[in-house]
Structures are given as C-alpha cells and as structure tokens.
Image (tube, rainbow, N blue to C red; front, side):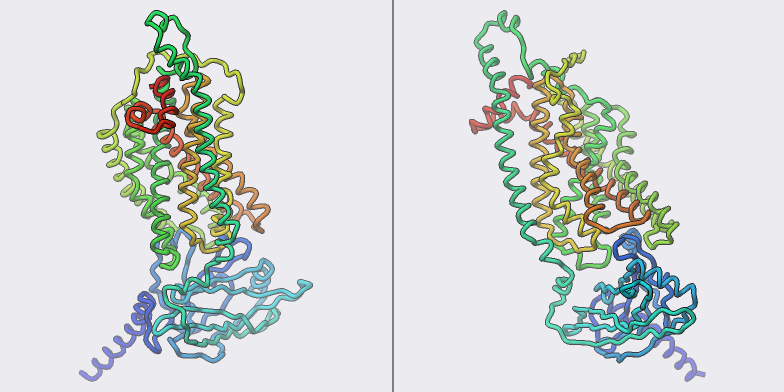
Length: 604
C-alpha cells in the first residue's frame, strides 16, 4: 500500500513539474538543457489589414495529440490588442534538435479547402511567439494565374541561443502542397539549434528598422523643426514689437499729459479691452474640463516617452507599452483635476462636482465609446480584436475606482491652492461691444483655422513614422526623436497662439480663451485630414472592419492630440498675458521689457 502511494505521488509530482518547469523557464527567460520551450500561436489575418486578426486555429489547422498548456497570463494590454495565445502543441526542447517529422494531418474536405483558399486569396499571414520573440509566416500562395492554391505544410524553425537564453528565432516555410478537396495533408516541423553571439539584451534589434526610422528624412525633419522653432520665435518677437510699438508710443505720450487731457483722449487697440480680457470664458464648465484633460494627456505622453527612452518597453512582455500607457494615464488623473478644477473655480464656477465628472470621463468616454462601437463590428467578424465583457468590466473599474478618485483629489487641491480669482485688473460689469472687424483675417474662426497649420507642418513627417509603426506593424523605438518633436510642438503651439491672441485683442475682441484653445486644437484636425491621405495613398487596407478601425482610432488620436495642443496653447497664452507686470518688474532684458511693456500698460 505504501509503495502504491509513493508511485502515485511520484506521478503527480512529475506531472506538476512537467507543467511548471516550462512556465518558470519561459517567464525567467532562462533554460536548462532539455527544458521544454513553448511555441505559442497568436493570430492570423490579412497582410494588408494588420488589425483584422483572428485566432490562429480559426483556420482549419490541425492540432497534435499532445496536451495543452493553459498558463499564459493575458494582461489588459493583450486583451485590448487582440492578442490570444494558444499552445501550438509542438514538442520543442532547449538545445534538442528535431528532424523533420509529421505532427498531425488535415482531412481536407470542401469547407476546409474553401477556408484555406479564401485565406490565401487575401494574403493571410500568422504570428507565433517563442520566449516572447515574434515569428511571422505566410499561410500559402497562389500560382501566377490564380487557378491553383498551395498550402505551406512544413515549419522549419531555427533557434539561436546564447548560454542558457534564447536570442534569435527564424521560420522558413516549405513543403508547398496543392489544395485539392477530399485529400489528406500532413503537417510537419523541424527544429535546429545554433549558438549565437547576440546578447540577450540585444535580441530585439533584428526587429527594428534603422534604415526606416533613422533615415536622413527623419533627421532632416528634426533639424527642420528646430530651425522652424528658432524662426518662429524671432518672427513672433518682431510681430509683437511692430504691432504694439504704436500703442506703446501713444501710452508713453499719455503719461506726460495731465489728468484732464488723458481723460479726454481716445483709447486705442488693446487698451480698449483691458477691462474684459480676464472675463470668464463662455461655457466655463466644458472649457475647464478640456484644459484639464489636455494637461493630463500632455503629462501622460511626456512620462510614457521618457519611460520608452529609459526602459525600451518593446523588449518587455507583449502589450507592455499599452499597459504602461493605461497605468500612466490613470496615475496622472490628479493633473486633470488640479488644472481643470482650479480654472473652473477661478472663473466663478459653482458646479464643481459636475465639472470633475466631465473632466475625469471626457477622454475615457471618447476612447471607450469608439472602442465599443468598433467592438460590435469585431464581434460580427469573429475577430480576436473583439473585447470581452470581462475586459470591459476591468476598464470601467479603472475609470470609477482609480481615475475618478484621483481626479477628485486633484480637483480639491486645485480649488484650495489656486482656485481663487486673481485677475490683475478689474473686470467690467457689462461686456464691451465687439466692433466689426476691418479684416476678415481677424475673425476668430479664421484665426482658429490658420492657427494649426504651422504646428502640423512641424510634426507631419513624424506623424508618418508614427502611423507606419502602428498601421504597418513596425516597432517604434526612436523615442528621443519623439521627445524632441513634442518639445518643438509645444513651443510652436504656444508662440502661434500668442500671435493669434495678440491679433485678436488688437482688433478689440476679448474672446481670446476659446480662440487660443481652438487655434492650438486645430492641429488635430489637420492630423486627421492627413490620415485620409495616408489611408488611400500609403496603405492597401480594405474592408469594413479595417476601415472603421482605422478611422475610428485615428479620430480618437487626433482629438486627443488636438485637446493637448489646445490646452498647451491656452496655458502658454494665459501665462504670457498674466505675467506681463511681474516680468516687467524683474527682467533685465531690454528686448523682453520692450515686448512686455505694451502688454503691461494696455492690458494689465
């Protein structure tokens, strides 16, 4: 009886170890000789529609009789990206070569034959993973006339190792077999191991595309952006000096007049609206929520880019970049509450709880609404991109139990620390009538349309590389370039909105808050217009699912970018207007004093 129990225990222990050892080895990326190496099958789909993905075994590929291993831990980023790992059941052991052998057979009836023919017609490819290293293969190919279709039946794997780590994986598809209904096709594989000098830290370098991302055009765009910033700063300084010089001369002359002559004198330009400049904006609840959301997007983008520069997130677990972005966005919710809540309080808003809810859920509602709409199409297509109900619940929990409380904390701090009205001058009780514009270019609508052209011209080359990294399945790794572009974009947006605001105020129109925000936000409109050009001329996408996926998420991206640029433009313009008196008193720079003196005299 004791011997029987010992045998049962040994069998159970052997079974448990056979499951846990490959799990531990894969997660630690360290293997001993003859440790099992797991080959995971991810998705299959059209080559030209990279986001239209399906489960690998949605095609009638056969599965061997080996057991399945259900230990893959799907993260939130995996679920949102449609990553659905399934064990291939192929027997692969570390440093143990496998000669070509059959692992299963496909009984090709008419339905299976039609499925493979459809996949080959639409250039289906599939993705696999070994030790987090991606591998791509093609399902099959057609002959030149398109009459006959062939299935690749032989997976030839070549795995490179450095000591006890896997550093390289290559797949060669061979064994082309013609598809004929009511036949049997044998699927085979082989594994060859080779010693490699590639370091484990550098094993993802082969997936990068230096010739694409570090092309001379990319470097030229960075240099061009830098020169545009220098030119725009000089141009803005000259415009402000020339625009405000006449007013400065008038107001300097008025200082020499006595009180009666000054009272009887006429007011010009900016001085006409000095009592209305700091009037609260129209629709302050929506406006403050947009500003708070824009500040949060900027802070989250900055942190994610810095983490991408430091950590090389593309070398970590699958979906780690999206997981990081979600975590950082949720963690920066106090920024949204602080800036949105303080601005709303400064403008005399009293429904601060409603403002907090709108500010907290503005971006998540936009993203989730778009995602859930596309999800219905994904469910109709039976795509792996379909978001499960459990994932929806997790996202809602993050919004209600992480983003909302942190936003509440930020709102309370913003109202307490900087929520008191601090207008540098008294605001008129009755709004001053806005005179008719002598020039149509002084209209807020025209200023808004023109305000986003220069910032978009600064970033449109970088937009091409970002689009290619997402829609063409390239790994984006040049986060240093992205950081420089983000800095240049913010500087240019601020200076452009300052110019737009100066022109508007000089035309005696004090509605500068929304104009400064929208002139910066119009950059997102131009980015979305560019996405149409990229779709029709730079890709070969087709179909309802891919088209809705592309334009839906591009609308989300462009809107978020526009809100960020609008918030940056407004904050910079507001700081420029409000800091005139302080800068004038403290600065020793004659040029800055000459620029700020008119603003100080006329507005402050």
